[in-house]
Amino acid sequence: MKPKFAAGLTMLTMGVLAAALPTLAHHGTGVAYQVDKAITLKGTVTEWIWANPHCGLLFDVTNEKGELVHWGAEMANPHALSEAGISKDTFKPGDKVTVDGNPARSGAPRLQLKTITLADGRVLPEKGVKGNGVKLTDEPDRPL
Image (cartoon, rainbow, N blue to C red):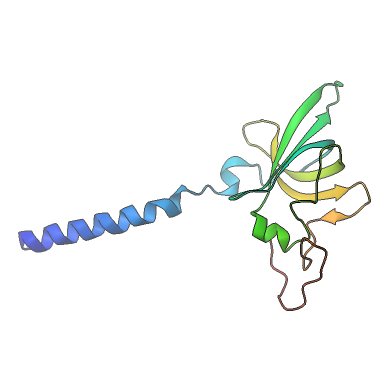
């Protein structure tokens, strides 16, 4: 192989690999959460974070010892949640919720959210409903 061609090929390969690095940076769900285990918690919302890349719900749970534990639930991005009946105004501090999800592998009080049951019995996320409650009729249901 000629030296100039080899150097050009090496530079091209390095450029492609460098461009691909950001795609490898996003973590998989199975890395941080026990996807084969589900838990259910009842608690009170303390903060609702509506932001990219993931929304978050912070809530307090009283454990079996009577101690208050501060939990966090990781959710999808605002766009995906808005197509599932959730908006920036859905939760507010003091709301009572029942949260289902996959716990953190580290044992930290954190989970990947699957569903939330509100005090009125409504279960979120709702497929095919915008954050403002309007039913989607022009798009198929997509998993979150």
